Length: 83
Image 1 (cartoon, one colour):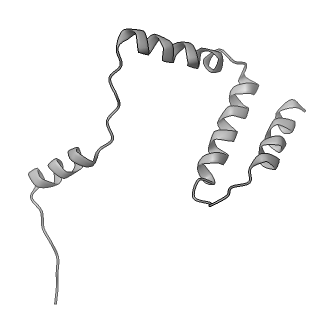
Image 2 (cartoon, rainbow, N blue to C red):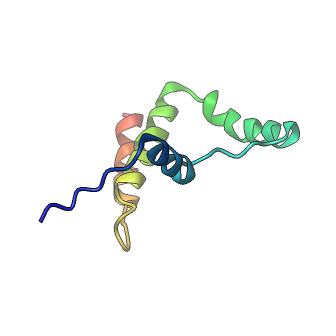
């Protein structure tokens, strides 16, 4: 028994549109605040950006764990960047 389901392109597109993540539209004042929050990171030295990137990747990799323990790994990343 073969149970292949075939959907029209229009239906597939509609489903994708409904389930797609959309970014919020911010007013100018809110956008300026967000830019101010990002400013220290965007203007940080390359070493700091590297640390931030590695820590964020580490956190993403461990999100699935119930109690992720990343403190030692973060300390290791920082020590490597400082040396």
